[in-house]
Image (cartoon, rainbow, N blue to C red; front, side, top):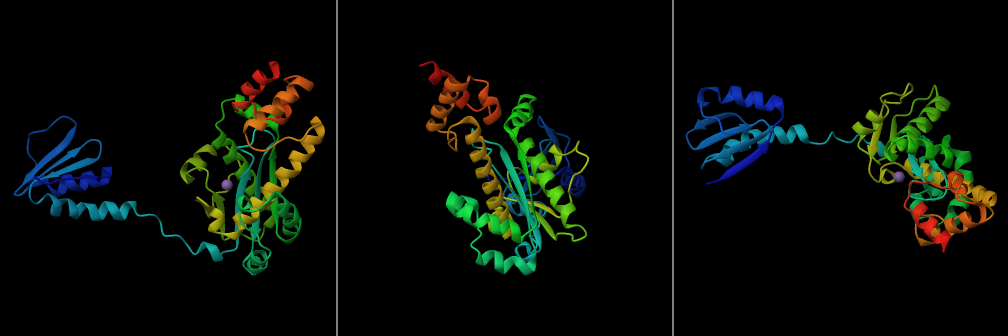
Length: 301
Ligand code: MN
């Protein structure tokens, strides 16, 4: 016997109950809301939203409702974002043990798009550090941009207070975007595109208690640098500022701080502990990374 299961919203379940009202039976299996018996199909709706169709007409009967549920779950059609005058934002440093988290927001207006593309602006992950050092300064002169740097001591404070890294990112993106929106005013960007690190709903939930939240025209897309060049520009600016911060920190601690979170990072951190004592890591590293423990072990050897 053919079985079909669909998932229904609460509204849909209500509609179904009305639709099958004359066929509803008294018998209820555990967890069920109602059972309706039609010739060729028995329909069992559960509290979980699952609706089971059984019998030789199961497929046709389920199809009536599947269409509706499919339509409800279909993604909102994307506006022609690529051509809009837009702000893009992206972050750097969240996977690096040493150095701050940097979020940059950049605005690319329609009439600048060709010039920016011609410059070779693309996702910073596709460019060498050298190319970024060469391109970013002129890019930053050409387009309005804002950067927010979360220093290591501040990052460690926030982290110790129990703030998840995703919330840290949400706060920084909102701050960078807010600063840029203010700078652009009275020009209003047609879109604000965040390189997605989290679903849009959750992003705004993290910002619930903030006083200044930019909400209008905010989109979150994975691989957003392919959606709009402003995101690629923002990723390059963030990377450039991060590289500069790493250089500054390296000078401060007297040795080159490696990027990433691999074995050479453990070695460098161990060396820092041996030279300056463990407290040095508070001001140049993200302490909750596993590297801290590994470095402490290495430093003892
Ligand atoms: Mn990103």
